Image (cartoon, rainbow, N blue to C red; front, side, top):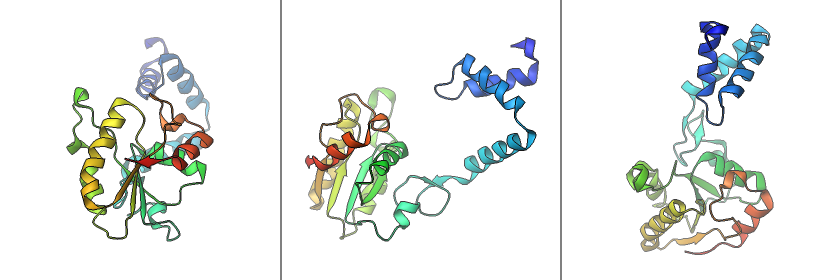
Length: 199
């Protein structure tokens, strides 16, 4: 990319490091950015920096937020007796789009995957167990993806939680095996939630 100069090459290289962005897409984005008004570029730069420095984990559910607790945990109208466990914040957003689930969430930030070096200690399971000490919690819905790792993680959590006397359920298999919740339509997610079973 030397023929564009060092600054352009550095911008393309930076954009190409983003997931799902290849060299051609990075180049296209770079050309778009340099043609934007300088005010828009400055606004984008500020937004990136503020997001990176100001976003952290919610103290309750471990999703990403810029406050002490996220808007969902702060919402007093939510059913605080039910917690849905999901792999990441994108899965939570997918369920929120259905407008069917009125409880709270817990974000694991991954799944147990020994081959990739991810153990239970690397996930937000300890934080989940701490939340479950609240006597008001009646049900835990395991909504990890229907993959080998997702099923392993759900089973692991189920075995930890059942002795606590809390109902543990699993979303129904309307969700295709190997699918990512992030990309599944709202109707399928709603049916999976409604068809959940004891686990």
